[in-house]
Length: 231
Image (cartoon, rainbow, N blue to C red; front, side):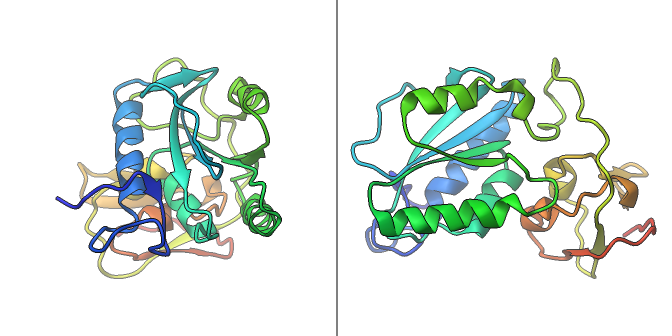
């Protein structure tokens, strides 16, 4: 088992030799996904760029979300792809604490702007400047994005989105179901007792979370085409 670091780092500056640089994110996603599947409700990842990080109890619930707090490397190594991975593998919202370092603030703003234009991800990532501001964001039940997995009763289903893209599948699909779980609109599902993968293009928003979740990297988002595919 790999050593898990206390700080989320992708450049190696905050980890010792031999550490897997994404171990903290992998662990956080796994715990959030398990919590969601066990009925723990919507999951929010809060990334702290200042030191010290507030000491909150584990499995904290604030407002509409179960909250996971993680400290982040201050060398701007966090990318939009890393945040997409978090959204694809267990979290419905990601909140970033504004840094006092103006150079890092520019990086944070660009990261949020890049994700805001992704179809289907509006409001999924946000910045906050204080604990009270974070509390207001966590109280916003209406901001919960899409569905949160198969075992979360009590939340009203999201309204059917306007189709904005479609998913292409290349050879190598193992029918693992990761894309089905990650899809926020229910556009992907396993059919015929798990022997086929079916895509409902009229429900695809083109957000790309399925492609991020796919361990085989055989999914891609294509321009809208009214085609139903099987693999």
